[in-house]
Length: 213
Image (cartoon, rainbow, N blue to C red; front, top):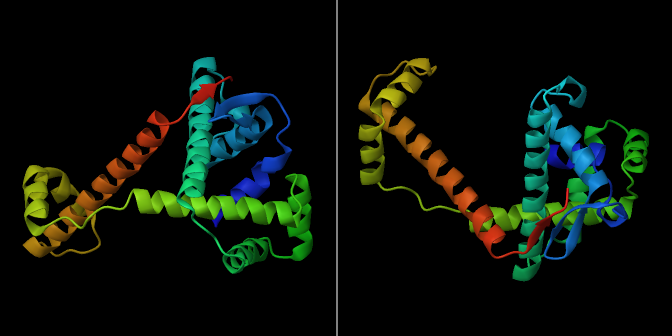
């Protein structure tokens, strides 16, 4: 839900991007206005502000990273369409209601919608896109549970790092089982990160992406 609130605060409605394109993804344009608003939110998530970045190279690198994220979002939405993923009206209504409640009052929510260039129908459509993209990403990046042998091997290969994690844990147990649980969690996190990156790369490799910005 945080993503939807952030986008509501920082993005123009998808249908209103009649500005200069920053990129094209299989012919679909990502406008400069959309990029600039997303870039602002991208920096805020890192505790930065545009005005605080005085190094031009750093500015360009961060802006390029924000554009990469927008390209990935568009690719995931297109893949969700290709797979026929359907988000029901009830699911969309429930999510929009959560976002509205987070703003504290319907009046504030309506004001934010207008500022971001949305009406309720447009925001509901955007929410449907976002939910479908998240669903297809989760499906494509799902991993199998590592076996006990794989966890043990990971523990053996990374025991020093895992020991440091165990020392920082609130759980003061030094039992081998605790170390293996830490190893399992770390291995799953690593496999999930690798799977997500592989999905992004596969979608990029099969797409026509033109960076204009």
